[in-house]
Length: 92
Image (cartoon, rainbow, N blue to C red; front, side, top):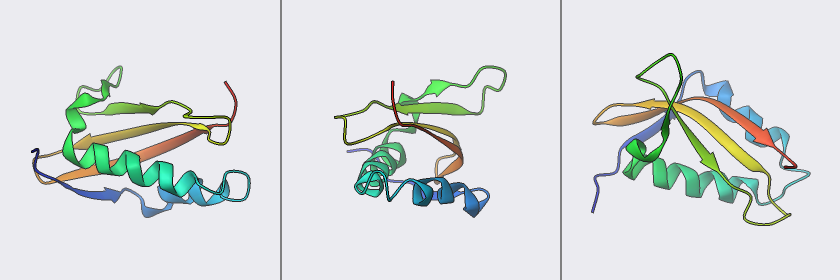
């Protein structure tokens, strides 16, 4: 099993984007928690961000119409995953 890294947001206000969508998508925090679980164990599974080889994108597809798609921009080390940005896409 892969080693779990610490997750943090830089700046911490990055996570405010999730809070802004809670009324429309009540289970969005669950979707984000699952994404963080995956990222802290396998951050290399994301897509390399164009123009910066140290940043990655992790795309969460909509599991149903009750969820938005989420794109997470991040970088990682052996000890942590740093979330740099989150984009919520309510409709495809």
